[in-house]
Image 1 (cartoon, rainbow, N blue to C red):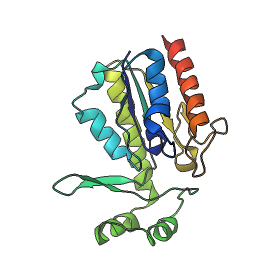
Image 2 (tube, helix red, strand yellow):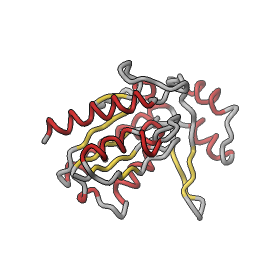
Image 3 (cartoon, one colour):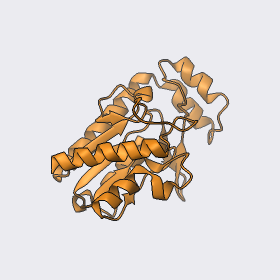
Length: 200
């Protein structure tokens, strides 16, 4: 069994001492006796997730399942001529509902240049909501087109979309900054093992 993992810091194992050994994607891969294929990145964004899903050299058709975590909708990325760079608005204990929220959040942040400050200032949240929904539909449709069962994860804190489950649900034990701790990753792995076993 080959499983495709992608997402943000929850998927990547943020705040774990030994993330590559104890994050749920590794626990799940070990359980099913397969090599872990986790392309997630802390602070990642939905544009990156879709870009990798559609253009990755490891085509989704090579996998038996996909487990993908969507990230906060106002994050994005750009290419500077050499590499892809994150444009990350933090979401710690926040849920944007207005341009004022974005203004206040951006104020102390280091953003690449004034263009990105203006990018966030001119767009209403409807823009980010629409993008988020388009990314979700793209992920779902791409996996469906190649017959790959998909489990979608997210955070209620930063999204109103429907997911199979969210990382900020109370049954997942948390580290100090809100990411799943080792106990939380074990619980997530057990939940996913149960879901995949039932699907088989």
